Image (cartoon, rainbow, N blue to C red; front, side, top):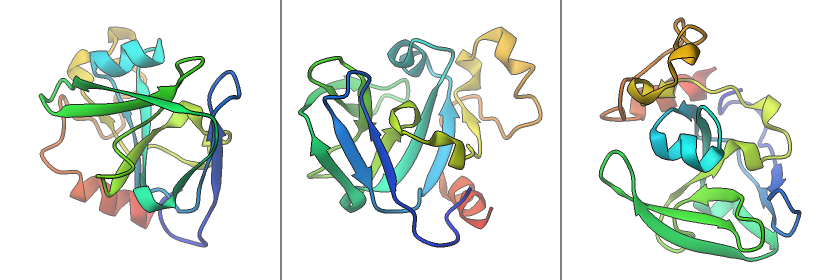
Length: 155
């Protein structure tokens, strides 16, 4: 599912149920990230990021706690998670950024969104590389997401 078609609405929340949100937009892009930060924050082999326009994200219940860290790319990353259970909800600032990177696992129905690429594969778990060998892969952060966004939007 790319960006074409009727405007969709997505719902999501944290593991304990205290935080709930809705997103009134089609995603801009979705991809899997294999950096060590995403592995750590997801407690898994990779994290899934789904970009949405910030103005389309609405917190409907709960409180998000924010902390900042530096990503593998060296850029500052603003991380927002449930104040109660710690589930990561999105990266980015509701006040400053045009795009939020919503964590795919926090969406209620992620099966409608197919990731377009895998990034930071140089940090990927060795056993997963076999499964993604036919996919679009980047060893690190792409210089630009423009081509990937265009491909995602056209699917």
